Length: 617
Image (cartoon, rainbow, N blue to C red; front, top):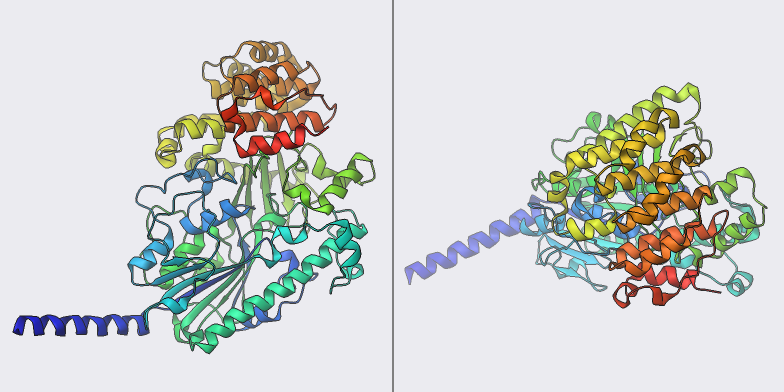
């Protein structure tokens, strides 16, 4: 009886201690996340943006971050980066949408699980969209009904809510709607980015999106009102941010400022100001990116940040204003978006953004089903095809340089490439070297095609990367031959094409395509590879080079490859090149049928999207 009494007393004292810990020692954290908007659509960050008074109220009692970045310009990759605190190309989560759900790195969990283990109630309303396996212990509840109100009395909480009113789909309107539905924002008053054609369609699209910004702002305010009503406001850090860049054409899905630079405001509660070494109401100039957000929440909660993540806290115990102010870099990545393949890496450092287009012959405007549901995208391409755009507006549909350099302070819309300007040669060289070092240190898994990763790496992407780090470093060096003059690189390209390693041959051919007509000396070698190489994707890269150069008709090589392929992922990559060679000059006719592909291959979503497009009469 005495033992039972003692046990009961112990339990009661423990509950009191837990309740005391809940009430005093740990702040609540709320993430309010708007979908698909960059800084360019909010007046709090950009002179031409919409008024967002409720978010401005948060800023007045908190911090505005002028240099906050999503590491990827699309949903699933960005949100996986947020949840893991890890760079997607390092852990195999860089493709949108995932072909394979990969495991979390050994010893790392999605950050809300650490909060939950520390006694937090974790709730998500409701979007997840992860490319890695979350596990069962991330959320106490994740649904359209999730709320902090289901927690135990006094329990600290982490709550995340996403707002889809400004999602890309909000701009999938018909000509009939455009003619009949007026916008609150006057289309004649909007600022049109210089890379967009200034047409009634684009003006209406901008105005409609500004309206969505104002609706989103009110929805954010409604959640803040509920926290206030529950008496939680001054116990709660509120983060408002965009889940990646804006949805107007050349925003979402593209690794420019318009796709990566996001608004971020953090409201600091009165009771927890001691965790913030910054002036309340001020603007923060230090660079923060999505890999840092999870570690920051853990640090605010007093939870140890796991060593296996890539991010660093920018708020909380031990973080000084001076240290954060000195941060001036953000790394970005863009790979596959649905059926559209690309391989772009960016490094923003201070006022400059360095862009590395590893496959520069892939134009930004290459067809993508979901993007081109928007009337503005459709009109933009029609105007390009009709020759009615100026040079800046046409760039989206042309092959790109292998590297670009932009001065964001002088050129916020990135239309003036400085990479060939000798005055900026030192900056270009420094940023190029810094990016190469990052790629090799990670290492970046995308130097292998996605189909190869699915076969060999996605069971444990990080372990594969560590095992193949030296080989990836060599592929980085081969890829960078596209940055040298052809005469300087010629001997090493020739060696790559003769290599026994298929990935070395693969990248040697991509470099040939990047050099274009200068690489004509390798035409005969490419013909041999296209005809005889044992690896399908190596043959495809050879035929692609020949097709881009107009040195040989590529159709037979592509048809044979599609017939032989056993992988839907591989076939999706092949069809991406088909779309490129068909849509770009000279515009090859590909007599492709769905029956060319094996039934199992046709089940792949990217393959289905490409076939829908390519088979339309």
